[in-house]
Length: 143
Image (tube, rainbow, N blue to C red; front, side):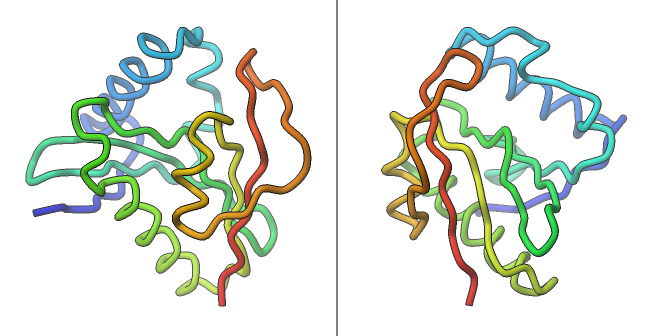
């Protein structure tokens, strides 16, 4: 069973988010902690993706006018290709529609852009470097 949990900062849930980000963004991708955590973590909505009671992934949402920007999304390597990311994106779409957002935006690592494209996201603009990794902006228009 998959459970989608909204996290509250300064709790054990944020510790779980912290640990997932370290494993994915620091250990796998080699990013520094300053590129993984920022002051916005205190203000933005943070989410855990759970399998039963086990945290398998995380992301945060930033409100930008009539859009939500998906940030820091990652699924632990041992849980990838099992539908957790797709499930999370469907939940994000549903949530954004309920609060009347018109689109979702994100900065995808270039090598994983097909994952987002398979969920209906469209590439916008040219490839660019962000934290020394090629990225591309992607959008999803909500109906």
